[in-house]
Amino acid sequence: MNMKSIYFILAIILLQTSLINSVFCQNSATNSGGQVIVVQPKIMVIPYTKEGEDLRTVLENDENKRIAIAKIKDGFDSRGFTTVDFVAKLKAAKDNNLFTSDNQSDMKSQIIQMSGADVYVQAEVIVEKGESGNSVKLILTAYEASTGNSLSNKVGESGKFYTDDFNKLASKAAENCIEDFLNVMQTKFTDIVNNGKSVIIDISFGVESQYKMSSEIGSYGLPLSDQIEIWIEENSYKNNYHIQGTTDLRMIFDDVKIPLKNQVTGNNYSPNKFALELFKFFKSLGLQPHKDVKGSTIYITIK
Amino acid sequence: MKKLKILCSSIILFLLFFTISCSINIIPTAEVNYVSGKEGTITMRAIGIGTNQENAIIDAEENVFNVIFFRGLPESEQKIALIGTNETEEKEKHKEYFENFYKNKKYRTFVMSSIPTSDLTKHKGGKKSITVDVKINLVALRKDLEQHNIIRKFGF
Figure 1 (tube, chains in turn red, purple):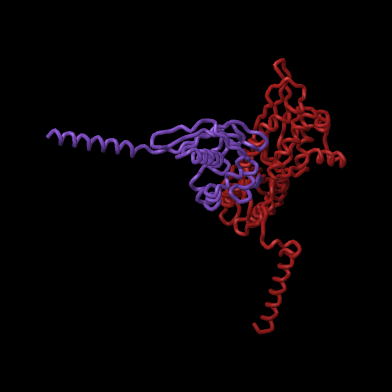
Figure 2: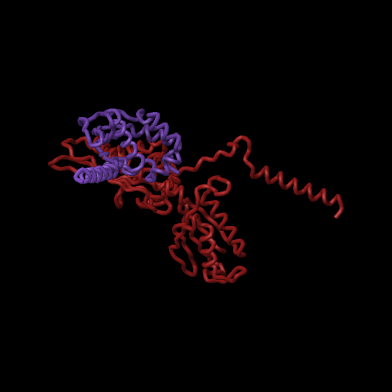
């Protein structure tokens, strides 16, 4: 190899490095000097609706529900946390004709999905009238939208009063439980920070795929399902994962823990980044995967 | 012989008394009970022990904060310990903060009222105790702990 070709190779390497730098490096306008802020979960407070109840009108007709929701949101605000406004999302969905179904329960899941909320808090207001006084009960439940994991449950009671001011009673019921509710939620958040957040992984095959979960592939010729489990075991945060079930055509991990931050760089770590690692793993086995990420659910389809 | 007997029994009695008095230790107690709470405040009734009224009140106030920080208070909105249940570890981890909090009396900035509800009671060994109703500003306390990275802010 003469000097000319060495210079040529060096020039190509330099050009490639500068190209990679210009593509993947942070531009100066957004450079924070390495400061990383953890991406916070999006929380939305929604009213509880019974089967067939119109979600669109339930809030407009019931001021007690509106008061309870405002009080709950106020609780989050007092902890310095901003919630996603349910009414605004509902209006936006209505204006943009985003609802694809008239089914009320389906509509609720559509709002949760389109809002991008990671956590939703459901508030049920129960008004009780009696001769010994009137009262309002408030049932609060917080769930992780993607996994359905319960984060906090509390019942707030106003106590019985000889009054028809149900707004005040609803407010009192919320006041009586919101702090406790948020404290329990915070312990669950701390647990997520320490032990990782949950993602669901759904692995299936395309219609024309020649592979199955029992297909023996890769250099060791092990069944595909076993190789997937070994990879998940090695790559889940703190080796924490749970398999919902495996058939020859599908494998579902209903709870795989991933860290909130990349353990090497300290940058935020998203389900999408984990999906990319999983994608690379399937590629390394000589498969043709297709990945989709919706919230905290990773869908892998092997062609 | 009689004198020797008296001397021996006196020594035995003295040693017995000395052993008993040495074995009486003041066990730290968490005699803190929830009284009421509203809009980010919490009132607790605590018993403090000290050599005089002032010291006993200080002890009661410190007990209140210790319970809120490391034990949690059933029946109140702060059922869970505000910082954590491992008191020794947490105090060691944030030594500077707690020194400033207790020794430099920073905790007093979170006390909204501290009202004795009993007379000073004398105990054996010169100790005195008093019952105090202490009302604290829980919102400000939580914010201060968050600002000094003792606890995490709400969320991840």
